[in-house]
Image 1 (cartoon, rainbow, N blue to C red):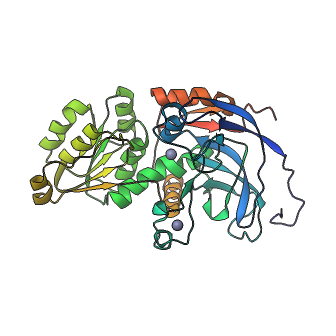
Image 2: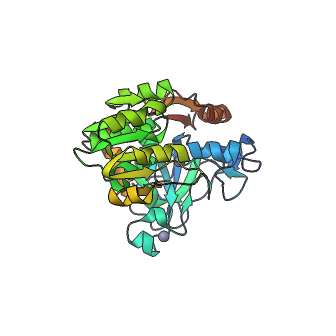
Image 3: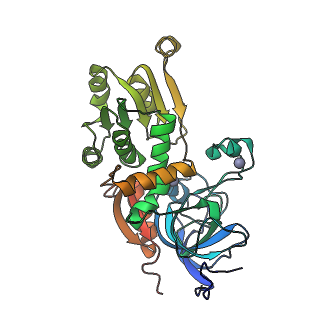
Amino acid sequence: MTVTADGSAPVSIPTSMSAAVLRGSVGSGDVVVMERPVPTAGAGEVLVRLLLSGICGSDVHFVFDGTAQTAYTPIILGHEPVGVVVALGEGVTNVDIGKRVSIVPLVTCMECHHCLAGRTVLCAKRMCLGADCEGAYAEYIVVPARNCLVVPDGLSDELAAVATDSVATAYHAVAYRGGVVPGSRVAVWGTGGLGLSAVGIARTLGASVVVAVDPRPEARQWALETGADEALEPDVALDRITAMGGVDVALEFVGRQATAELAVRSLDHGGRAVVVGVGFDQLSAGRIMTFVLRERSVVGSYGSEPHEVATSLDLMASGELVLPRVVGDVIPLSAILDGLARVRDGRTGGSRIVVDVTAGVGR
Ligand SMILES: [Zn+2]
Ligand SMILES: [Zn+2]
């Protein structure tokens, strides 16, 4: 099974690895670092020795509150990884051993009509690493080779990791679902997480105005550091944005009814609200008359396409997209439960806490 790109002897791969596992039921908080077998790459797959994996808000839901579910437990969590390819399954030709790769977190069938139309986020057989199959808070992972994107030289491991979800999910929302173009006026509601990436991406895409809204002073400060023109508290934001004439694109990263309504109300005529935050609240687009006469749009946005992860990597590598606060801290795998709690409590130091899966594992 294992071959190397240059015909040399395969690198030594251990049989067991450290991994952070949600051991108890969803929402139980029962996450432990334990030994698990190193998986083997099948046809079309690769084995990746992981370096870093970012902590996502979804992980907090899986672990602490159960508002998002994993397909099963026990499961290795983690879906925002970067690593190095160490073994190739049969038939793999798109990536070589030794390459540093960002791993696209959604595993899709590439056969259904959504996949064939290039909308893999809508794949009916879609699986997310660390939620529907084994994830990336581990020393090794097996993924389809097509999920691996070679990281541009010069881009840090930290940014290569968060590109796969924190940045690319925001890119999908801003560029594709939001349709932000040069001159767009943009409001970002919620800049403590993915919304912080959205601020920078809107700026990179040429938005003429970017207004950030967040109740947390530090999140407003991060937004200003990322290029927002203004950073406002929620209770004054609508009046301020209305006084500006409204925005063309309002992005909601909170997942609550009240914030989504504020986002819709912050739109100028012809504006589009993009809801990215996940929650169980009902969504209201306001009075039908207003909705129709002002030709407002309200759309959802989920995940990203592989080419959007690649674009995120390229934009950061070229310096066109600068996200100084996207990585708040890097912690060892042994501190994963504390890291999850910090994300839950908003004690992050930036958009993401990233887990170094090579540190503190005793090898
Ligand atoms: Zn995520
Ligand atoms: Zn599909």
